Amino acid sequence: MGKVSVQEIKELMTATGVGMMDCKKALVETDGDMDKAILVLREKGLATQAKKSGRVAAEGICTAVVEGNVGCVLEVNIETDFAANNQEFKDFVAAPGVQGFRCCNCKDCYRAEPC
Image (tube, rainbow, N blue to C red):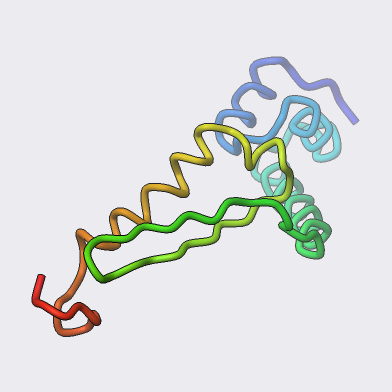
């Protein structure tokens, strides 16, 4: 297994979005072959994804939006309470509930009066 340059690692990181050490390991494993390294990283990613699929997203936020006589309750879950309390996540959850009213198709909704 040969040495790989910093430039090769940087190129693989840019192409895949994977961390530096994972890129370096993949390049060393494939003797610097960029295409094979991408395949190795892809296979590793699938293995990582399979491990994460069993995890429970038990934290999250519920939001309710009411306009007139129509209401919407939305629950969005995430894995950690730290992430659930992040302002960016809170804004993400709030946006769809409000947006749902603005995209209402009158023939499909249950409003007493047309939109």
